[in-house]
Image (cartoon, rainbow, N blue to C red; front, top):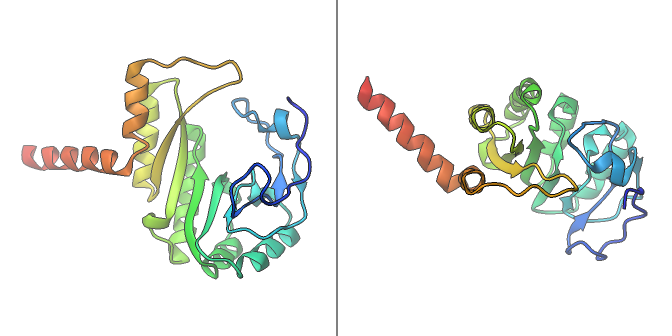
Length: 207
């Protein structure tokens, strides 16, 4: 526990189709266990797969990313599931993504400070042709329910499908029933879409 992971081999430990092209992350976010478990960013040999599960693939070198995109042009139903760092997205990367058979792009909004970068990323993605049906966002919650709900709503308003995730450090936190219900609502699109629709109708009736 705590030492960087080794090489990645397809079919070992991860389900078919999942691939890792890098491990680790150059950031040092206080709430994240990746730097402790995986160490700093390391680019790996690129092995085929349609589900990219890197910790922070957008932090990789441009040369590595180009090789990843070249591999993905031979894949279908591509998903970037690791939680893309929105602030590292560029127009060139958006163009590369638009050339692929993308099923879903997953971003991360772990703090209020990540919202400006997420909104900027959505503008770039929208210009590249991506709509909300392919844009998802992990939202770390569990400390302040009012702030957390406001951030989840902001992620929706920014054009992404939010997916709430309760913060869970190495020493496990036991959350209350209220928190569990909250995360159930904000991790199921049908539930939060219904909630937002009812609120919009109520506002309209009051006008």
